[in-house]
Image (cartoon, rainbow, N blue to C red; front, side, top):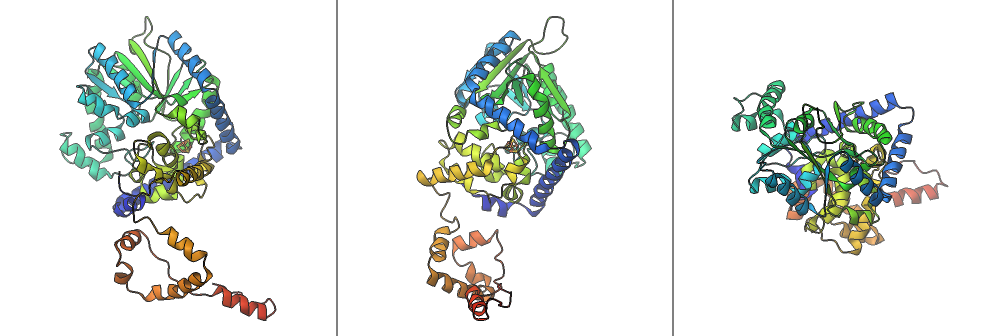
Length: 473
Ligand code: SF4
């Protein structure tokens, strides 16, 4: 938790850095193409989706009560957890009371947030990730680096080595072979599992329908095979009505991967009904707060509109350079730079520096399917950090104080400009003499100082009656 964004960028191997850059760029392009191809005015849809989510947040207490009633009518058991620890305890209790020892799990960001898997394993429950990316993260004792594609930072050769190590066949980095081996291994786990755990992409307050989207179909198996299903849901995942779902599903798939619709879209209507052949005997929904109500009361509440599409990560120049681990938290990229300090800032004060990990170019807001004004929120958090004197991440953060002093003192500025020429001929060894300068320069190239003297140019221009030579460089 100590390293900074630029350290991560510097330490990424060139192959991984390039893979992250190309994959995120490709997703951004597909997003643009699919939205432009399928909708006359995608921005209008983003604004509408944002308004629906904002409305839901502003009436969250009512919608939560409505969702609870609707879910209970469908036969689900509803639990509320104030924090991650509470949610983990509820889930463990459900499992222990039913003698469940094995859990199969589909992708759920909130379970990452509460560190559910290590907690269950410590308490004697085998918990296996069934999303291929998450499974690889699990066997490697790693962390996801992207909301939608958790192993965007891994090469297939690394994955093949992990599979070999885990006894899933000899080294083979053919993607189809890797997938087939994972499928064969995980099939057994679905059939053996006593309980399945899912997240929820949306929950309709009106009907109590839980909506899950995956590209691998693993959530379907996690729900269909075991006798108990548990859905772990952040309280912000509600939408008011079923009629809102097509808008969100259309935006989610396109924003995440450029797909018109994610391959498997599943509506869970409750536990297995009489006469149905499969499905869980019991359905539990655990709603998690974990400081969301505090966020809701803050001036950054818009971040709770997020539908976890990952588009802001894919488009972000910082994410593309540094990859997700640089954000040191469950939620990477621009959304994480806002959400992580808000949700986890008390436990991890060093996350207070995350809002600075942005060039404020605004691309994250432009692609967000629910129109979250991420740059505004980052500025609000920076302002809050300054007022609360948030801890600096480390001593070698670039010396902006010095820069600010120079830029506001004409004499100092002129001297610095003269020294600028000298930088071009100063050997690297001298520039790197201080450890902070060395660390800072290790992931940055100083541009060549190209000379030019604005004041001189201006004087000449004024003397020449406003003509000048037109080449202020
Ligand atoms: S903040 Fe917006 S763009 Fe980023 S993951 Fe959430 S919904 Fe997607």
